[in-house]
Length: 616
Image 1 (cartoon, rainbow, N blue to C red):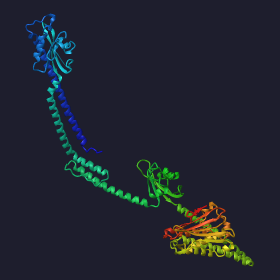
Image 2 (image 1 turned 60 degrees about the vertical axis):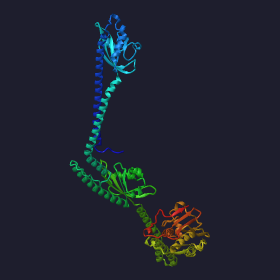
Image 3 (image 1 turned 135 degrees about the vertical axis):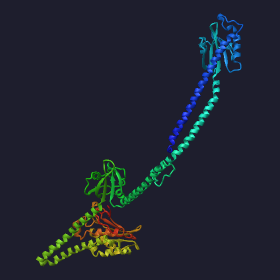
Image 4 (image 1 turned 45 degrees about the vertical axis):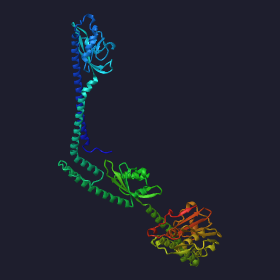
């Protein structure tokens, strides 16, 4: 819908008022002329009626008006008088006796006309008073103007004479004046309209330009400028508004640049940043905040509604009140549990209630690494403490009693070998987790011969347990991999399978193609693993039965090494187990490992075992 231009309403109102005044004046003139014409016509009719009433008795010369007979005996003469009086005019002349009977009428046959005793003008005339009236004629059915005057004879009223004229005739006489008045009023209104338009355009043009420019500025088009109209009264205002627009454009550009810079900084921050108003409704949340708190962290939503965390809302209240001094740790539960470090400060806003700015750092990974480090130190200390204690004890015993030297030296050597194995495995894990992981020495490797070499590396371990190792590998199945690492992974899986299989049992080793991957499966028929322990089998130093594991000579690092070798090749390791039915360990390796980067090499062993897949 178009808006009215500046000044249009004012001048339109003035024009309408002027037109209304002219119309009222014209209408008043018409009404006055109609009334004047009506009054003058009725006055003329009244005078004519009086004159004819006075002349009627003289016209009946030779006839004598007597007594009660009145005018009735001279009806014919009276009718002739009426016809003669109305001849050549549009008037209607009637003579009515005192009893109301019509004696003569210039327009109708008197003998056929109704008694007029009830006619109002006749009743007034019989009282001796001339009268006028406009009413509908009962005889003709037309609007008529009537004038009646008493007929006097011998000092008494013998009847009445009435003169009538059609009311439309009055309008016809007034029509030329009405047309002239309408024409003058129309011309006056048209002239007023033209003058108002020209005067309004001359006055409102500069104002309209200012208003249109202000509208463009409010819409953000700040490059618009007001042109000078040549009117000295408006030029200072135009200059001031142009200067204001230029200043506003510069400030807006500066503000937008600062907002873009701030937005880029917030988007690039690794920490989550969000701000709230005094009611703790979110005003701003950077991408990291939406990622951390979930898609519900959108501007306009309440903090508690968006996050479902009452503790975070409490921290926001403390930050708004300026009471959140040090950074506070917070647990956030959602799709996964997270540990956050929260800091905040009050956010000044309009009104009495400040908002809050919160910065949330996700320290979940740091906490996990800290827990891994703590567990690792504890596990390494525990694993090394036993052989060191035994070595020390037997060395002291040997020093005191050399007679058992052979047996004691064997025990010391066995535990020294165990410590060496633990250290070797730790060094292997460190190499797999370090930058060297991205520099695998890959070459084309046949799966079948690789499995055979891994079995040979077991030495006489299968024979000592009378275990049968069955191999199923398609001829020609190959992949590109680090042969030494892949062989070590298979050795670790086979060693575990032989250890935990019953004596005389069977261990199955399979290699198969699965899309772009080669899948190695080592299956034993041992006691299996409880479901609660399966998810943690690939953690360092994790053992289902610690006593039996040490008895069988394990370091607790074999499966962790298997997982890291799989990750180094871009694959994964998993286990399918059911307690009492053995285990099936799967090593999945791509035929062509992806190019590894330094960032990919950082794969800390999680105590939660979050990179290994298990099924039971």
